[in-house]
Length: 99
Image 1 (cartoon, helix red, strand yellow):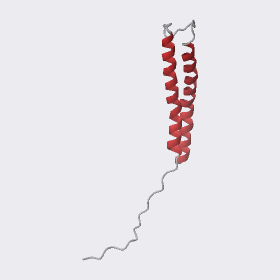
Image 2 (image 1 turned 90 degrees about the horizontal axis):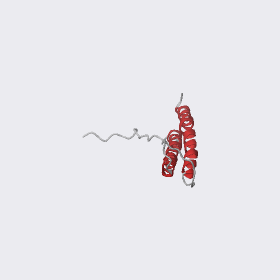
Image 3 (image 1 turned 90 degrees about the vertical axis):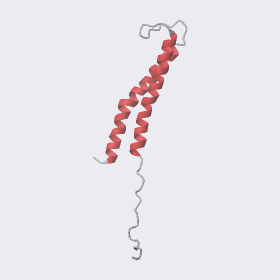
Image 4 (image 1 turned 180 degrees about the vertical axis):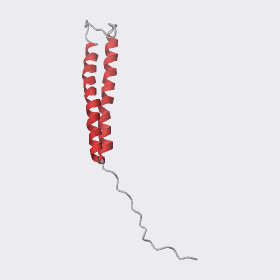
């Protein structure tokens, strides 16, 4: 496989394995943070019925989702960018006179 194909496969793989769970984490985290703000909502986060635990879990999932979505973007930018052209030195210069 050439470098372009490998970069494309890596970008697609990270989009599937990091981007999709990141989007799910953003959705669930946002919903949990909003539910924590509703008065009288039945909350059960690992046995705790405290609304601040739901808000904290939601904010944590939002942050984790942002990180998971950023991974495929970074992989795509780093692997699919064009390489810089190589600098070619001129080796046809005349040699200095011998002393």
